[in-house]
Length: 341
Image (cartoon, rainbow, N blue to C red; front, side, top):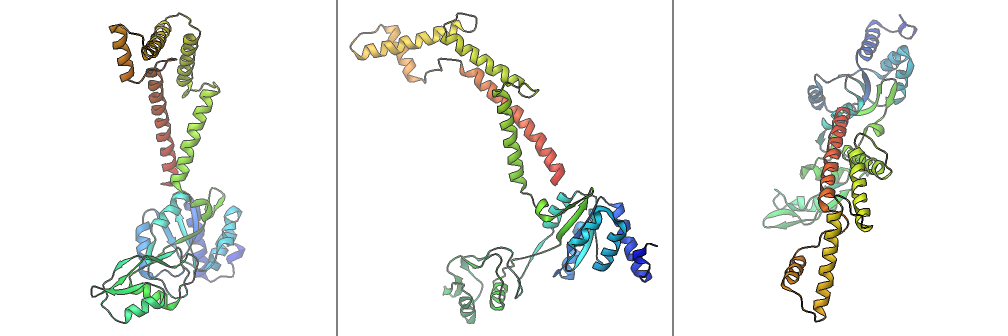
């Protein structure tokens, strides 16, 4: 028997061994705060976590004994013990565990003396109350109540308690009467041990949408850098070649190099320039032949095409790049999904 538990009664030694066994059999061992959670909610949480995670409630001193006996990095969990801590064992990674615990939280009425976890807002609109003392009670705590149409009505939406402020007794009673439940009740992850590292909530509380958007933006910027710096990769080689092709075409047109694939563009540009001169001449009183008038009218009715390169290749290349980026994004989302659940 380890020195830490030699002096403990048998039932306590059994508890310590159970903690050690659970830690060895699961990839993640964490500490959760059970303070203020009613027994009914605890039962519901256990039910929601069934098959995914196991919660073990025991004394903090016994958790300390177990962690000390195991040693190594897991012993650092002792520094996160506080209040009514309990252990949670799972094979999910800590990011998924944190997200799962957040999803199991439920709303409850506020008690006097509790701190508002977020701004508490009373919405504008009618209530089910008939005229009576309730109007004065609501007004006393700053809720703009009035009688309208034989019912008590909240005239304007108002923030009655700001995040971090203490909820007093009268405000708590008013919120109960209005059926406003601002308090999140559930297991609060204090820390998790995974692969020789301690993860705290500030590391695990990730905005997945923002994280995904950052990855997508980074992928787009890397793609553009590769194309513009002519660094060919499997994903960007096609875009680099297409860009070089368009630039070569533009150079051929500007320099009037009559090569295959360029001559038609040069002639097309010359034709459009001729029409522009003809239209300008007509504006100065010169008469145009019927063919030139018809061509000028057609050119005026439709937007002029680009003179340096055809639009089609650029559009096709853009579609190709978008398809490639979409594949990259889908692959990235699959990876993020595996990480965060």
